[in-house]
Image (cartoon, rainbow, N blue to C red; front, side, top):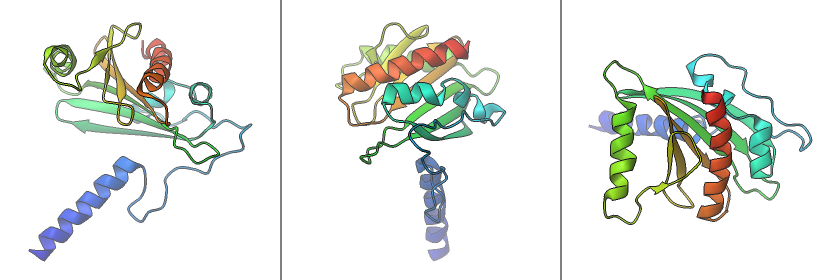
Length: 194
């Protein structure tokens, strides 16, 4: 019994560490912040995990967020019928606030998987349901876009062909300010997404 609990706790620790961008021992995976006049280089990794890091330049993130990018961290994962390429742009203000940006590209990973079906259920149909936190349509991004969440946990989701782009921007701004920042970044990414 204790072995099962210990194994479950170890798995949870690894999952949380991976999601939060740190190693299980607490050491950060990101590099130290460069001088304010030296922007971080774009990710040079190749393959599916680097796709999201090629969509927005660190200088573009810095322009929108107001502070330089200190590191980019590409990653990839698969879950169910879908594959995800992600990029985390570490942005920290001199005052200590977290202005990091997260970009994710979702695509079908198996034959028969439908991004369109997922989009229909998660966004179009969700708008019609009577609930307080329903997605908000956002004009001018991709084929169709929605903001889901709030000023703390919100993200902009944009459909482009057979892929879904998700952009979230950190910082202490209002929900509307975060929507505008995410929209600017998503518009840049959509152009490169094709």
